Length: 295
Ligand SMILES: Nc1ncnc2c1ncn2[C@@H]1O[C@H](COP(=O)(O)OP(=O)(O)O)[C@@H](O)[C@H]1O
Ligand SMILES: [Mg+2]
Image 1 (cartoon, rainbow, N blue to C red):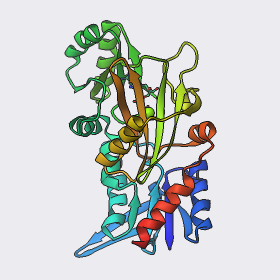
Image 2 (image 1 turned 180 degrees about the vertical axis):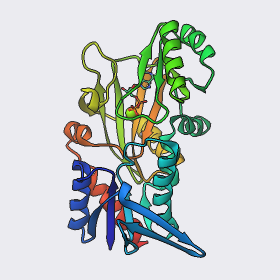
Image 3 (image 1 turned 120 degrees about the vertical axis):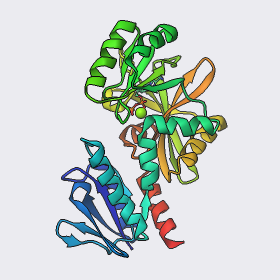
């Protein structure tokens, strides 16, 4: 059984390395592939994948750990369709490329979560910068987010309608739509819950550093183990399954009205989670793909 771990970095990052080892421990042969080096070939009735200049069709499955810096919509299409090609050629891809694309688009994901009965913060996507100031006035506090961001980079907390307008105008001049959410958190913390298959591996609280608001570990967030109620577990499982994901890291906020899901991460890092819980998801993810391949 040959399983690739896919990421864009020149050398495998720590979570990819862990996965490569956990796959090998379970008897699979594992290899690291860089997404920018993967090419796809199509002709009548034939699809193939290339790595560098050689055909690479001997894989049984792949675990996707990073799409890399996506500099344009076209690069995003290329990378996702290259992953999709593996799936079309009968290989098991974790997470499924269609679901990665879905969840990566924060508004598209919000639509699906909302319609599935999962609580989310009030959210607007727009190209109309003139509606932004009144939104911020109405909500008092709002978060402006990159449509495809991660690790907290670029998300901006705004309370001043004029500042929000200037940000909106600047983003628009760079061809970016505006994703704006009501700021909903009751505390300077949120929850990250890790799901693999049908199992909730656990959760952590992520605390924002003093005088800041972002809780991402990449932004200096500190973590501690969280006790998960059955409500939280069900929320995380449902958010993962409605987006069609095999595993995920679900970001949950606590508000006066209850929990809200901020985001469902399709390639979550787990250093913070492991630090807080003592659990590494790598072995579980390796087991999951091997189980899927044996079916
Ligand atoms: N609507 C919101 N209200 C309050 N805090 C939020 C809201 N949305 C996100 N956050 C916080 O912003 C940070 C980044 O959020 P997230 O939406 O998950 O983006 P990223 O993909 O960059 O992690 C996290 O600390 C999260 O708790
Ligand atoms: Mg997040």
